[in-house]
Image (cartoon, rainbow, N blue to C red):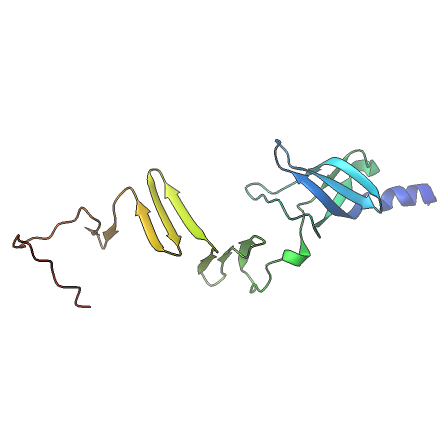
Amino acid sequence: MSKEIFDKLRGMIRRVSIKSVDDSGEMQTATVEVADGIERKNVEVWQPYGLVGVPDTDGAISLAIAIGGDEGDMWVLPPSNPSQRMGGLRKGDVGVANKAGDRVIVGADGKIAVKAAVEADISVGGVSFKVDAAGVHVTGGGIWHDGVRIDKTHRHGAVVRGGEETDPPIE
């Protein structure tokens, strides 16, 4: 095999450093360094359906594939940043995390753990459920427990009206 063919084959798949990521278009693109001082711009980043991310470029790496050995027709796999990898998962666990340490772990044991540094929000239609350092906030809709409405619109029977407040809960 000639050196030219060998070099072309060797250059088809290579480890690259991610220099920048542009997530504004239909396809995410990156500027990658394929060798010392040699960069390729607007390289498409192929990502799995429904899962996207933009890593810190300080330490981010990926695998680049030059289609047919043509470095002008190159794309990269989703980048990783080993210095910010979540780690600590057990066999069968799946996790999503960011550099701040926020994470969602879907455990192989059937548990889902959510950790957020500032707040966690769930919104459906006109109802929102937010947990933050101040507590739990529900906006819109109603709250039920075992089929009984317990939000601000619930009522009690057999109450004698007057100026007194009820005693605190017993348990």
